[in-house]
Amino acid sequence: MNRRRIAVVAVTVVLVFCLLYAAKAIAAELVKAKDGSGVVGYKDTPVLPWCGYHVHDPDRPKPAKVTPGRRGAAPSDAVVLFDGTDLSQWQPSDWKVEDGDLVVVTGSLTTKESFGDCQLHVEWQAPNPPVGEDWDHGNNGVTLMGLFEIQVFDTYTTPLYPDGQAASVYGQTPPMVNACREPGRWQTYDIIFFAPVFERDKLVKPAYVTVLHNGILVHHNQQIYGPTGHRIMPQYDRPIAPKRPLVLAGHNNPVRFRNIWIRPL
Image (cartoon, rainbow, N blue to C red; front, side, top):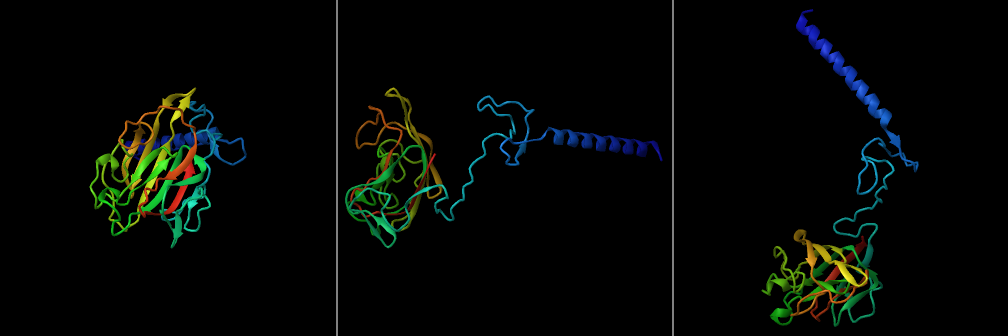
């Protein structure tokens, strides 16, 4: 055997022993979680200062298991606000259920339960052909906490001021793009909302919202500058409770809704 082959064999043997030693050391350092779940991890790693747990800590709280819904259906931990059957989750109103859809008649619609931080899914359909004046085509609104409106509007056929078109934070911030479908087709809003925070009646953090319209990101962690109003400057001029009911604004245009669910965060 020549020197070159001897050197290769020697290096290979050394590498094998190093890998075996490392594997044995790693295995020896693994520990099981104290809760008996069988989860393994490490306790000899650095402590993360923002949470107090070790890196790869087996005792860190485990995420709850949630079963996703299929094709936009509610996940297993969601509060289903409307599934096409009845209005049991809502306060009495003139709205009606028709062919499995929730249909505006007059006035607004308000949930019985109150919500703060949340993930919200709403599907809506503007009437085809459009009904009413140009400025009223498909006019409605998903009003978070009954105060912060994400506009519902037929912006596919009807031009309107940018901070009043579909998916705008009404009167404040236009969507990044116009993702509206034509009237008569179903549209989706997926909304992540964080409520404003007050301490001793003083605002310490405004509301923020992320919105996907028909799967397209139109607001990303967008600040909301105050409760919604028409032709006014938004402002937080009084304390707001941590949780308030969700409101569908109404505006008396026969918009349809379906598959509404919410996950408190």
